[in-house]
Length: 137
Image (tube, rainbow, N blue to C red; front, side, top):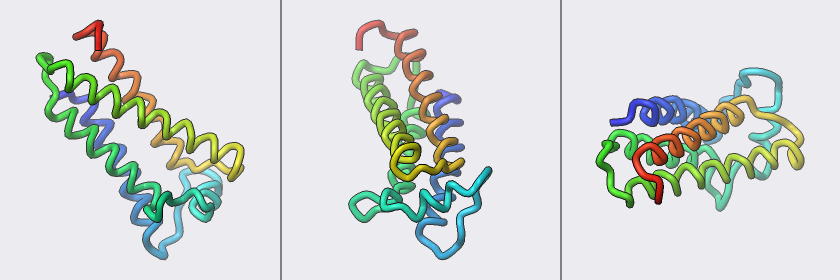
């Protein structure tokens, strides 16, 4: 088990889970700072293909937690590649959603920013772990 990935997954599931509950209920979102969360939630980008955006976050953090729980130093190249693909995809989505917040919605959601930070940490941790155990993916 890799405690770093499991911890990121746990925190990320809490953030994405909170947002999913808020997005699928009449409960108003409470921002950590500012009012940007309400603007982001009200935007057309709060869901993709009819699925609330936080649901994708739940799937991402759940997959990261599973890979983190299964992790061993003897992982095969395929497991390490799955981790690289997962965290690289998560980073790409976070960058895209941050772009939408900044330039399209023009509001910042503090919960979304915290998820983006967790994704950046997971991405950096992935490259540290992969480079430690394998120089060729």
